[in-house]
Image (tube, rainbow, N blue to C red; front, side):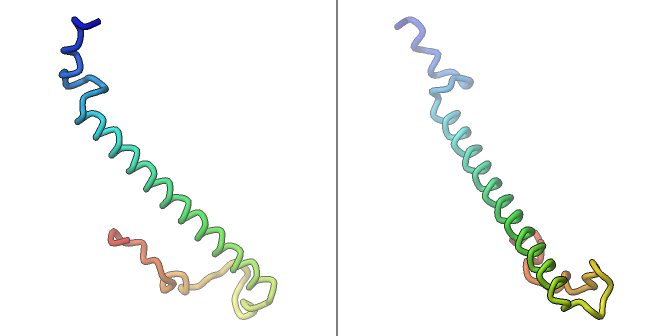
Length: 83
């Protein structure tokens, strides 16, 4: 269909370079978000395992079971926008 070749110049067409760039950027953003989510899940898993090991070892004998006090606030991460 040689008569329809002008469609590739339209702003909504999928072969338009700017549209391909937008799709690529969105995919990269999704990959980065997925990686960050996986990292956070791994971190939470490690923290839970550590807490369970500490509970099993009796390390928290001076505290109630499940009470973490305020130590968690001073453990790395920060959670701020600068991460």
